[in-house]
Length: 171
Image 1: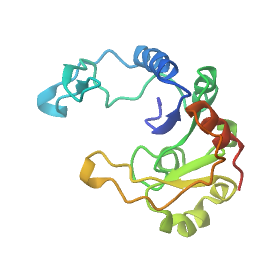
Image 2 (image 1 turned 120 degrees about the horizontal axis):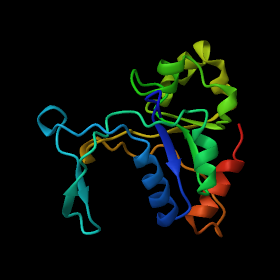
Image 3 (image 1 turned 120 degrees about the vertical axis):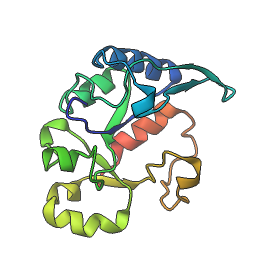
C-alpha cells in the first residue's frame, strides 16, 4: 500500500489475481530497480525457469491506501487481511499504530501467534479478528511447519469457495 503496509490478498482464480496485479503494477512509482543496490527481481514461469526480470523497483509502496485496498480487492472477487502485524516493518500496527475499523478487516496474520497476548494489551482491536499464523518466509528453508488448520466442509473445492469460507469466519 502507499503506507508500505503488507496485506495478504487472495483471489478466486489466476485470472482475477493477474488482473489485480496489472492494476497494482500501474500504481507503482516509475522507479527503476537498481540490481546492485536491491538485487535481481526475477520473473519465473510455470516450470520454475526464469523468464525475465521486473524493471520497476518493487520495494516501494503502490498508490493505493490500506483503506481503499479491501474494496478494490473485492472488485476482483478477492479477500484480504493485514500481513505479519507482529513484525517491526511493513506492518499495519507499526505504520498506523492500529488496525482502523474503516478498513473492515475481519482477519489478521501473525508470524508468531505466541505474541498475541502481548499484542492484545496494546492493540485490543485484534481481539475481534480471526488470527492466522504464517511464517512470512522468503526462502524455502524458512517455511514453518503447519501449526494451524481450518476445518472446512468436504464440498469446499475451489479457491472462490475457500475465500467465501474465510469471509464468513468470526471470532
